[in-house]
Amino acid sequence: MEIRIGIANTGRELSFETNEPADAVKKSVADALGEGAPFVSFTDVKGNSYLVPVAGLAYIELGTEEARRVGFVA
Image 1 (tube, rainbow, N blue to C red):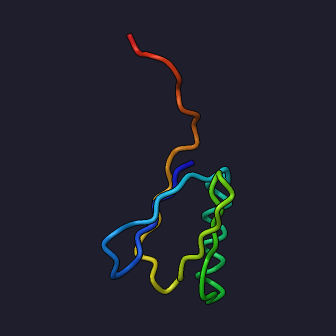
Image 2 (tube, rainbow, N blue to C red; image 1 turned 90 degrees about the horizontal axis):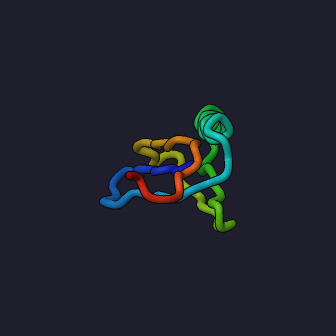
């Protein structure tokens, strides 16, 4: 699943793919916002970790969870 995160006062967005289901990502973000945590962490498919400051979150866009098709379309 692809995740795109917009960070306030930043011209670029953070974009990566993760193996976590959408519900788990939503829950971790909601928990961080509810508990007043300073940051929320994500891990991509390559094992890289991202720490995003909760105070700077502008938006989080979660992509679809379907697998990509391989091949040519006729």
